[in-house]
Image: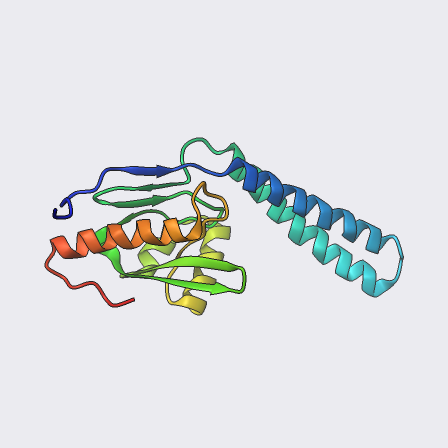
Length: 180
């Protein structure tokens, strides 16, 4: 039996449980930083201030993500719509995708979607997301990086979903997808 030429729309919802855990982790770090600041030592105050700003920001971004309506990622025949994180790039047509790979650190793997003309995708982002996307380009060569962290899918499922979509599209153009 052959593979269907088209793929149905697949919507991946945000994971409320993972988001709540991330927010609680941020609150815990902010609390620890406040305790550190209470020592009154100048170095401790500087470290605490940096920690409070960093984890306070991350916590606020997670709250914002949990309050957003709709799915975090939608994959269809034409491309995908990434709303999975505070640094999500939005709609990416399969025609812009050159390759789908993975990258990670111990305990965390991300799906890296290499796109043509990364600056086109960066240009439509807000200030914070543009900064993060430029950092992704410097580190990975692309602004499009997906993580299963905030989604109701595991990493292997996300990798498979994105590679299948890319391979279906590149196959329909007569293009041989790059090797993994």
